Image (cartoon, rainbow, N blue to C red):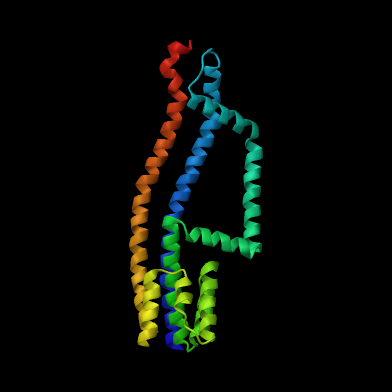
Length: 259
């Protein structure tokens, strides 16, 4: 029992560190995105109307980009409150629907699993949780099908949970169909080491190897992703604000023609 508890504590600590690092990588784009949105709204509400009043004195056609900013500013000033209320209502309704409808959660997770970068990280996290959970429950003396079912609960990814449950049912029925194993949406290395562990009769050892491999992969991927996102997002923010201001000041360059 002491060995199992120690394994549980070590597993929770490692998973917590990896998940925290993953959230750290995801939090940065959300902060930059929110900051960009606030800057744009501030410019549209406070700065653009002043330029609209200035340009209204001239009887000339403004560039398309400037006209678009002026139209967006007027719409935001007129309907901003309603748009904010609608956005908040949509967020609340989406949250309630997500918590109540299992099918919606399934669709959401399945979609996220298919995204290029986010999906890869999610599957690697699921593979790590799978390996850690199986080591824990096998060490506790559970049979393989029961260990699979309990491990599925640890993986907060409904499509993968369903696939692992199907694998457990297949083993219960006395069949170990390779197709059931291939349907489990886990990293290829995890599936390969799982099969090797079953064939060699040393599943816990191979699961431990998989955990170390995935931890190393996730650490490298998240570190690389964080270092790449920082300059990329700052450059995108600069381009967004720069393009906004360029479109706003563009008529100034042809002020003689506008007069």
